[in-house]
Image (cartoon, rainbow, N blue to C red; front, side):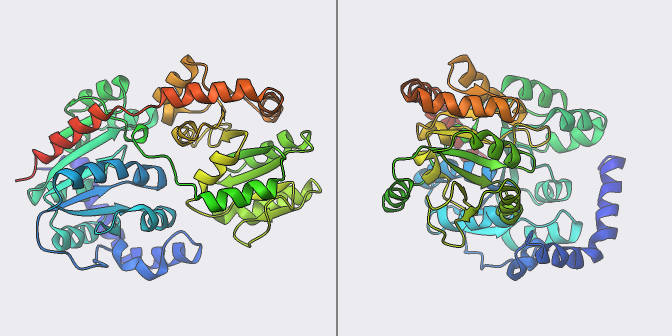
Length: 417
């Protein structure tokens, strides 16, 4: 028997489900859904399920989906007979998965968490094992999969303080959901302890984002960008959110010879950032429009899957989502893997364990506003030897722990019938 709160949740999502198609179409018009694949969001398969045992892996957005790649590779190496289905919930993640998933791995959009969509998805794919990363807790999907006999795992678990408090206020619902997982590996000790209080198991530590391969950087494209820079320093503001672009523009303004590259977290914001630059009397080139790199002091890389190029090229990189409260910071591991000096704001709760290691090794610089960001950028350009030494320390700090991955894979492969 589900606790009352979960029964009410199921009733509420069932009552709202007739509105789902219209809401999804409205989101598609704003670029937040894939118009051609909306049926997948309603649980209807967009591909044919091959015969055999299926493992379903789910990551919410870009970072979580990419973190699945080393796990997928390890599972395939040990059990090539398994069918691997990957789901995610955003257009950007789907586009990156199309580029990065190994051949034979199926991608689908995750169904919305209504009883009907969840039931259709589970009936179509019949997973023997469901693997969720970080903080994706969807009651209808999880409990529906459990009721069908699927084993469940929560890996690289990380819940924000507000999420943990919310679950603590609903202990019966939390217990029903977290005890449904047959395997739980948290990113850090604090998360593990909090999850155990909610009823979860503790099967050790795993942070999949420490294990991912560095983002690709095509050598020909990198050489072309370097030629466009013509020897000028390149400063990068990566995965920025509203409010951070303005700070990056102000920070780079005094460094007159430098080229500033802004990679917005959401590429649809490119025109907004271009307008911000224009307000400062600066024209900004657009990557998506084919503008030549180096022709403008500001360049907006509003494309997906190219962060590897920019981290490889940049003399220093500010990692966004960190100067203002809310996003909780973004992935510093990719910059560290590519030996790019790291600058971050103070709001990095989503990456607290990795940043703790980086800061303990003096392998990242923390700034608080546009002025201190300008100082950090200037320091990296004035003393490139020190900046590269800091980047080397970051590279050593994020070296992957293959033992944790092997432990996770062995645990997962022991679960399906």
